[in-house]
Length: 466
Image (tube, helix red, strand yellow):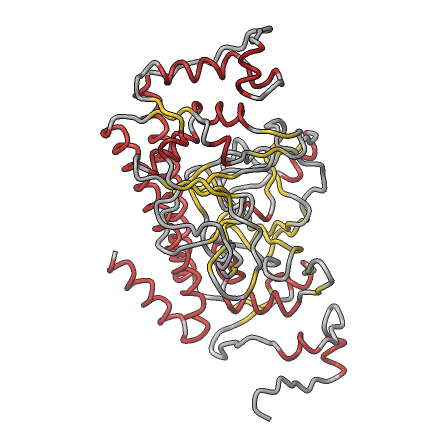
């Protein structure tokens, strides 16, 4: 019967499975394996398999950085980590990540379980990893960690992971012991080395992008003469009642002297305006009705400092009823969340998107939007954002009407151009890294489908084109 998923298996096959899998999905969804390749269980060539640490995490900057699933994108671990944890020296030694460790997400939604990322880290300042991640190290005589990462991320590796997953109402789990049973083709080292080269170049491109973002921030501060400025923090201060009435704020936080000095320094340039006066659009999104079709949705996790993540991470929704649709050149601002509130980035992707109810969309024809995002992320912008946020420590908000009150420096055209050029260069490096990693993943799929020579030809053709 056409389209029917059916498989006949023996009782001995079920007994031979380590977890006695009797569910039909496991036996009817076996991925394609190339009969000309040699396959072995992943576990045969692992030197380490370890759960992460279960510990309370925070965002106050103290402690050791700790990786979660959210900090893995495009098969690499991110360079910015939001959470930290207070650990003992023994725990730090036990859970510290080493360069080229492979992190595997063992529990989450069905969509994200099995996400895999390669850690490229500084050996002198290692991060640790959370309990819902598993660390794998490989015997590099047979399997390079870059190849393992690409295989688990490609469609054949994902099929293997998903068929082993166990779904409950709210989450999906994959037992790492079952991951070890996944059959992986033993590709020749020549091909694996080329995969490693792609990861290495992508890593360097990410670092180059970070340097360009730092260059953009430094250009802004240098132009204002504030590169070495230290904000004042006196032990005590006073404010006039009339100022409190005018601002509609009675909390002492709002009147801290460093906030006042930021505004004074900007106003003294003669080029400062309230942000609301130059914005054509200043709207928050709404909670979307997610669906399998429509535009990608950008939430607060996707709005990084001077970077918007747009890819497989983004769920989709139909745009009907949304107060605004994100277009190329808009500036997105994260409106909530301890440690992430106020992060801003220019949206540089060609595809339109939808903001959720935690993201504010700014649109302006008066100034360069890339420069605007860099200003908001600078010390000058972030101190003003800190001033204008509202709420308690557990639920803080930055509303569009408060964003409109930020004093903005409308820098000379050349400064805005220099900032723009640096950020666009960073964006190009990020895209280059993503293209390289996509090619590595596709090369593994080609090797499985058409053989290793075809995969090598694919990678060689990309090198020639570049």
